[in-house]
Image 1 (tube, helix red, strand yellow):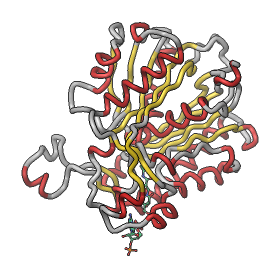
Image 2: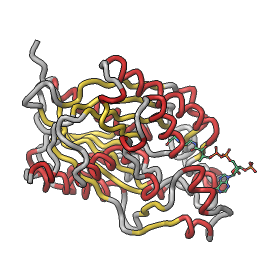
Image 3: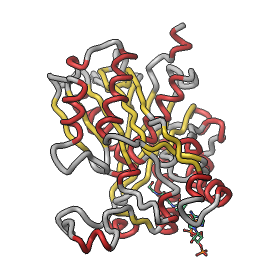
Length: 337
Ligand code: UT7
């Protein structure tokens, strides 16, 4: 059977300049650097002072286009995974499409919180595999600072702003590219992690604002327990059904919500911490951006190499979770040299 696979042919990311450190947060809420670092692994996060999610996303996509050496007009489809769209409608993908001048592309947003990039990647891959699209841009972008309550120490220490993007194109060789994915949703997890108001259930009123219902709510302990099991289970499932032993996996690319969840996932997969992409200490949880941000940084630094087996894994609000197996095909800048 002839398989037309989607493969990642370019990566790009953007993180805003302003750093919000644990020391800064100590001045805002009753917290301390030691608690944040030991409970989460986070030291600092980036904050977008001016602009919206589409600005983060557009910069990440522009970087990707520059690296691939193509014009925005060559893009067929733009999918943006985000829980912080510029506005309810139009979709942030439309705004990005206009900002970058991707005049021939159509696009839409996907809302799957911290699993958003994996859900969007799977969706984008189907358009390549179907043979109807040749260049699909998948973006994970979130300006989490727009929905974080900086008076709530339970959540404000966790999140940051960032965007990262990948370009999907048909693979020349079916041995490379997005080989497999498994995605899950369990809506009964909704009460533990959500933003209550602003939608059709609780449209904005003075009362919703007074009750601080337009911010992230998280029952951290419940989400933690579900995330540890969900992310590790699905990562192991994707390994088993692709006959991957721990020594076959070059990189685990986990969603960066909590270092303890990442460590538990790596342990269950039987892989060494040195094989795990971790940048949570510098960026915190950037929701849909965490996984492509890791891919882009590790590729840029020459550590992500052509031919490596890469397992992406995420868990987030919904609940949503999943894992993706990629045989990496894009040579990094050092390999090219
Ligand atoms: O990305 C989407 C998915 N999200 C996740 O995967 C996040 C999952 N959850 C977590 O990562 C962790 O549950 C948190 C990092 C959010 C919290 O860590 P925890 O070890 O579960 O702490 P906790 O919520 O059980 O709180 C322990 C204590 C509490 O004090 P008491 O009640 O024991 O006196 C909290 O009030 O720590 C207190 N606490 C803090 N102390 C200092 C909570 N936040 C802070 C803080 N600084 N920022």
